[in-house]
Structure formats: C-alpha cells, structure tokens
Image 1 (cartoon, one colour):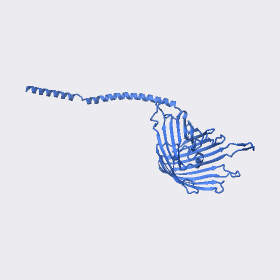
Image 2 (cartoon, helix red, strand yellow):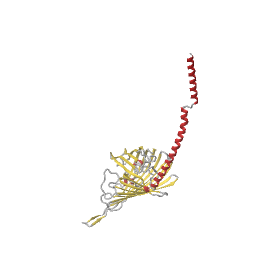
Image 3 (cartoon, helix red, strand yellow):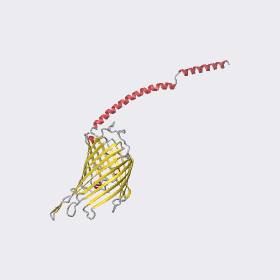
Image 4 (tube, rainbow, N blue to C red):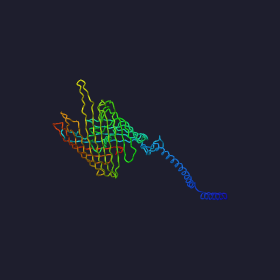
Length: 438
C-alpha cells in the first residue's frame, strides 16, 4: 500500500513539473511567428536591392536601344534585347476578322440598270499578326458575286516593315495601292454604299490592287504631318481581273503625297496628291496616266456627334503610238482619250447611332466626237442621299436613293436619260477590326 501511494505521489509531481514547463516555454507556433517576419524582412530588402539594380540596367539598355533607333518609327517601341520581343508592347496573338456585306438594289428603269435583288456583295476573312518587333503580316481573301457566280480571290497578302530607320516603312506583296482617298478602303468600310462614278470608271468597282512593293517616308518636321508614298507593281493587269494579265515592258508606278494638319477644337484635315503611270498593252508607247487630288475635313465630339466632308478629283489621259503607212506615205496619230470626274460627300452624325449624308458625282469624257470631228458632250451627273444607322463599329444598316442624269449628245436617238436607283446595305464584322486611317 505504501508502494502504491509513493507511485501516485511521484506521478503527481511529474505531471506538475511538465505542466509548469509547458506554460513557461513559448510554443513552436509562437517561435515561428516571431522568427519568420525577421527572415522575410531581411530577404525582401535584398530582393528590392537586386531589383533596383536590374531595373537601372534595363533602363540604360533601353536608352541605348532608343539611340540606335533614332529617326525610326520604332522609337516608342523599346525592347530589352535587340533579338527579344517585348510582349508588353506587341500583341503576338493573331487577329482574325470576318466581314459580310449585304447590298440590295432596285430600280424602275427601262431597261433595268440594277439587278433588282438582295445579295451578298462581298464576304471577306482576314488575318493580321505581329511576326516580330520589326515585321507585320497581313492576309485578306474575299468572295464576291459576278453574274450569279461567286469568285474567291486573294485581295491582300503582304508583309510590312513599319519601323525602318529614318522614318521609312516598306511593304511587299498583293495589296490595295495607296492612292487617292478610297482606294485602300474596302467596300464594307466606306461611308457610302456604292463607289463614286469616277472611282468606278478609273480604279474599279472596289479598288485598284496589284502585286509589288511600296515605300513610305514620314517627313521629320512637326508643324504639319506629311507622308510620301512611292510604289511599283507588276502592272500586268489593271484593277479587278481573274487572270494573271499579260507581260508588259514596264511595271505600274504610282506616288501619293499626303498632308495632315490638326486645326484645333476637334477639327482636322488631310489632303493629298496622287499619280499613276500604266501601260494598257504590250506596246510601251501606249501609256495611261492618272492624276488625282483628295481631301477630307473631320470634326468629332466624343463619338456622339460628328461631321465629315470628303472630296476627290481624278483626270485620266491615255496616249497611243503614232503609226506610219509607208505605202501611202501617211502618218496617223490616234486621238488621245481624256476623261475626268470628281465627287463631294458630306455626312452629318447628329446622334451617336444615326447619320445622314449627301453625295454629288460628276464624270465627263472629253474624247467623244461626231462624224465631223466636233466634240460632243458625254457626261454623268448624280445626286444621292443616304441615312445610316450604326449600332457599333461592327454593324450598320444604310438606305440610299440615287438619281443620275446622263447626257450622250452623240446618241441622237436618246441623248438624255434619267436613272433613279434605290439601295439598302447591311454590314457585319466578326472578330477584331483594325483602326481606320484618318
């Protein structure tokens, strides 16, 4: 019994000693909570010091890059390494877009001057991507209806170097030529449904495009923004065609000088001058020249209201080779073909979603002669009014009424005609869409 009592006393004393030690000693959690902040604090100070050194080195390297790219369009695009792409400044994901352009047309003319139906005028899909810090890639294909059949073709497929030194930019491939105001704008992006008459006569129903190279120079002064574009293409075909064309002696050459000036208070203007030289046949003496002027005036107030005034003038002159008849000892000089035309378009955006527009067209052929060699008037004059509902930059609905007055004085049976047409247009764009040029 004494032994049992002694054991119980020993166990009680042992438990008391253990309990006292537990209360006095700090727990492992307390130890960890007090030691970890000290460790974290010391580590973070070291990391901050290293980070500041790395940042300082990177900024110095970027300054070297800027000095190396002086007078280049890439001065605002620094990279940490010449061979490294800075993903914070460039989106390397490929942009994909699909555009569908529906156009309905109707007239009561006899004979009919439209197809009197609703149709898919064009369906386009395209890809755009930043290949690296120097190169961009573009591909755009389209299907369009011609006489009830849809034709698929590549409209634009080119590579571009937009950040060359000394403010140069270069692109090469199949492309819409940078001439005039509308030629680089696809039909679904234009501010009206139908192309102006002079544009359709000289550049095609949509645009003049070919395969070649184009060099652009952004002039260095700042009081006005000026850009000079010079291009050379194959010239084996002119405008829209479903064949490769014919081999010519010389390529097609063109130039466009653009000027932009900000007037203040949300007003801006851009005007330019264009020139094109082309050989329609294999005879290099058969030459066609185009001379053009374009201008636009814009005002916009936070995309809620806006005004746009757009105009283009084109003059075309085609010369033919002189022929010699050695048997009759006669020299004949074919008459040159001279034509000109212009349009003026005004559009008033009176609501965030609605706008109303008016366009005046004029085209004249100065080469029409009667049997006695006297010049006969040949002209087309048109007035059109439209209203546009644009729910966003990706969708629109537009209605247009156009009245044409046609004079063909050489046609003694019916020298004057009136042509009235109605158009409705619906356009949708799916995917990403690049910003429009000014």
